[in-house]
Length: 266
Length: 255
Image (cartoon, rainbow over all chains, first blue to last red):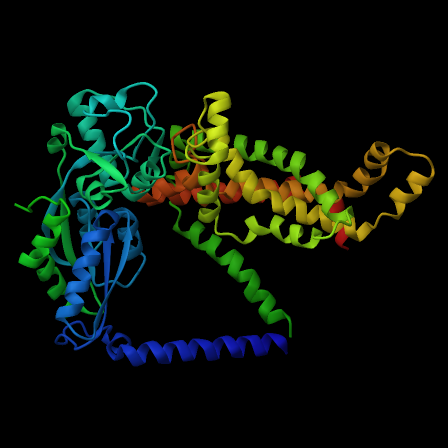
């Protein structure tokens, strides 16, 4: 009896929640499957974006919402590969922005992308250190100094493969204390003070200004990551998704991305 | 009447594993498992889980006895605090450990001052994280058993002239053995599966802090087949631990 009551209660709650959300966004429930329909007046646009895009895309999302009344943009920021994995397993999203072309190619090959991806920005590595740079880290080679706790990205994720490229080109072998699975984790360990230095993207170090200091190094230009963006196949909001990618590729997107340290798409 | 929800409950546990099995590329399975990084991860996982089980016993048994037997006011509140790691998201536990034992944490600074060592990014940090999440399993089981058995035997032994340590060794411990056994198995299994607190507090480095669950997570970034194979390995190890190491008396006690 209790079980029935609980089940009924849960069902009622679920109905209530469903009713509320569909009241706010009438097109989300009906939008799926009608990808050829004209841009609806409202609805939720779901964007899967690489963790390193967190700050810039959140800002761009706000601007996009302001330009499209009734539209809500919701983001999932994770490692690019994890996002492809989700799409591959049937996650519903409208736009996918990856931190490198390799991962985007994987997405295209597994058939979760609609059309051709376009590169919208480039990024390179920088060293994040504690405020005031107490350990006096000035060059990439300094990171190999004994006694330093250095944290990098694992080679499986884009920032990690960029790190490996720089290590190879400079002939410097790092002995990291940890290989994190996304760039924000590296930044977090520098911020908490548990790592002396971390290899992150220029943009991550820039957006964390005030909490960490950024040390640029010339060798980073040997490992430039290109960021492609594309509309997801069978996107519930295909028309809006196209508008969003155009917006990111356009002048306003460029301005916002440059502000945070992204390079031009070329 | 009860069958339907019971079958559903069982399906909720079994079917995901079946899903994993179906997804596994069995022809590549052996080659996926026998890579140097997965073997190192497995070895690290077994070692750290064993060490943290030992730590759970050394620290958890006295705690359970104190919680069950002591009549100090506020002991009920203390008991709920002990359960905290069970309900906390592991990442929260990891952050808490980081801000206690990390370089900026007060205990971490003390350790650094005393030994010149840092706790995060070490194998010790993995063991600490695992002990943190696994210990409640041992304490809760033991405490329940202690309360269930009451302290009549201990009192009788004491009136017959046994000293407290003798009472603990000859009366309390034998009474506790079944619960201790099951508690140890649960702690070991929980330590083996620990992920969130480990990656937050200890980081992820092959051979040092990258345990099997972390290796699965890293592999999922590049080669999902290999991640699936490692997941199956983890499941097999966990089932083996529970099935083989579970003492007979545990089930007997329930009957």
